[in-house]
Length: 302
Image 1: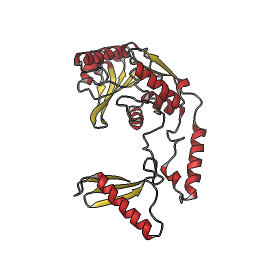
Image 2: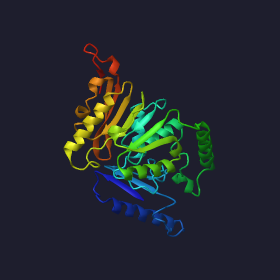
Image 3: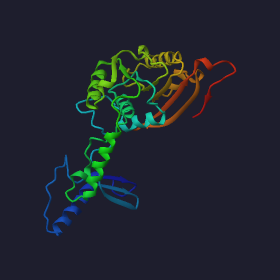
Image 4: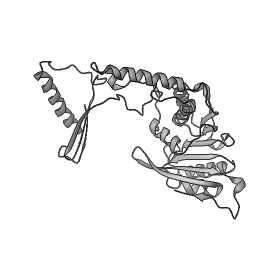
């Protein structure tokens, strides 16, 4: 039983969960079924209490493991990893076109490139997962048939190979090892070229999409000058590549000015997002060096 409280007299989630447990046990005993034996780590039934102000809702969890857990991070311990659902949202919001070559030069454990590979392969993220309701002993048979049909249809729609080449790189050896494991677990290691190289020296695919969750201090230490220099150099490198779409996610407050790509793009956009509890931005620049002159300024929107 999970409990989530907001603006109510009770302030302890665990206490609320215990009270719900007592109610459920009393109900089972009243029905003559006795006290259940529960595996608290892997329960067959998971209840969720959401109580906000005067409204309390008790639900059965149909999903089981959170939907952002795709399963390919088994055996990987990444530092501050990006959630898989956030990575998928970044690729969709920023329109990381699967028909264009893709590069993540700061790939970390490889979340963005795995999600882009699945998009390019047209693979459903939940294709191989088990859902919570599959462990219910009295579920409707129609649920099993519908799920089996959905998984079959999803497999039939998959492509055998990505639409365009996929590249990923990182300067940190531990990140490369983690990314290699995740790519293998996700079944896309044969489709992604993974390299151990500095982001500022990574080979940028012509006309491709460069998408990355940029470091903002946690991986480059506390040296602000080093971090700012990284952003400036990366921006200068990207500005040299006509036709590239730069799609960069960061919580660095000075990222936009340091990257300095507004004057090198015919179109720029940005979105306010969050990474856990951290405020962040997603920036997109479509680099168009050939069309930039004194009379043709870039079009910007927020």
